[in-house]
Image (cartoon, rainbow, N blue to C red; front, side, top):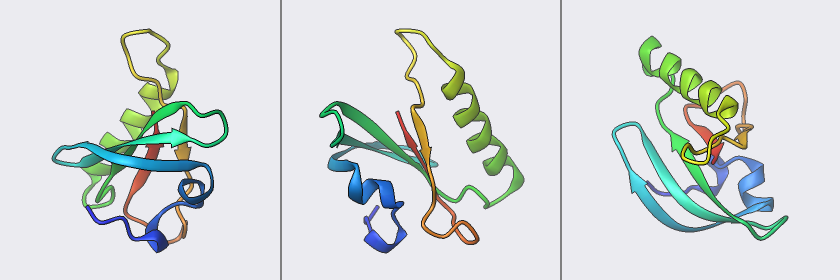
Length: 97
């Protein structure tokens, strides 16, 4: 996945510094990043083609919703969902884990 800066949410440019690509699956890529605000390590998950069909949109919404509510040491927590650069036209959902 090429990281085109015009397609990235503003927070990635200002707050997070992407270090490496940690992995990829059938519908998402995960990047290791550093939080410039507190120096902590985070994972940035980019879920692609979220409006490809209704199943993909529901899956992305369900994942973000459940991970935001989880509070267990063995489950990754969704700290934030980043706003897209153009809310009227986007196909990727970025989550900070």
